[in-house]
Length: 285
Ligand SMILES: N[C@@H](CCC(=O)N[C@@H](CS)C(=O)NCC(=O)O)C(=O)O
Image (cartoon, rainbow, N blue to C red; front, side):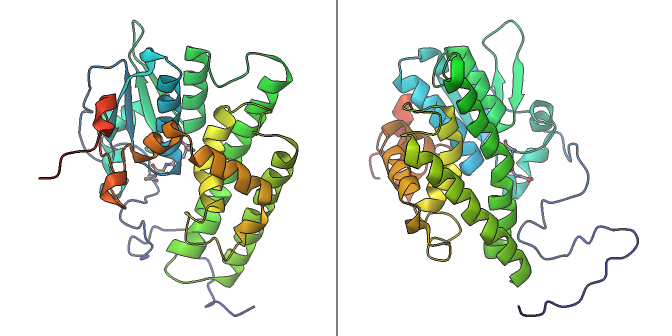
């Protein structure tokens, strides 16, 4: 292993605002709003405040899947929260998610608005509200919730661990990349073994467990995350590959990936979504 520059932590940690990391302008050690800013509200009962990162895509895919199943009550307004510009620290956003992270949902369909934050909680809220994409009872439900919560606990090692040190950290630290590459590969193997015995994570049917896991591990397997496909030899996880490709072909998944996306090919971008026709191709000017 190559040596990293020696660092001895001081007795008491202090905030170095100039540490130069990719997210140095938004990361801070305190919670709460930094500025007053109300959130916009559209005409649908479901108001989503998000960005098309893997955590955001889980929710837009879920909403597009529900609409495709005929649940018209899942119509939604998706508003863009630009986390690189600190929109997640506006007072209105913090009122919906005190953790200042996308995605955040305001369900205004009842007498009082209900706030829902944490993507796993949002998927569960929507699945229960519409009675869809979550087995009602029995072992299938339990299996679905296990994989949903597995994702919530595991992905920070992939994103905040492997992805951060492999792609974003200001210097390449061999120890950190090794540690988290090992964990990312172990997680891919966990999924591969499960998908060797089952078409989808919870059993024979596609559920919110797949919707939660796919934007992270499906994207990783398809070589779309951190440019790390070759490094992690993702093609070796054959069952994950089969599952990832099948889900990528679903039209609601393709629509959901476009919502609140402001980078990449222009045909793949839809900064805000307020109705189904927003996906229609725009006439070129
Ligand atoms: N556990 C949360 C994680 C959400 C999360 O980490 N969101 C990121 C984007 S993927 C974010 O908003 N980051 C902004 C920040 O950290 O200031 C969830 O699943 O909803």
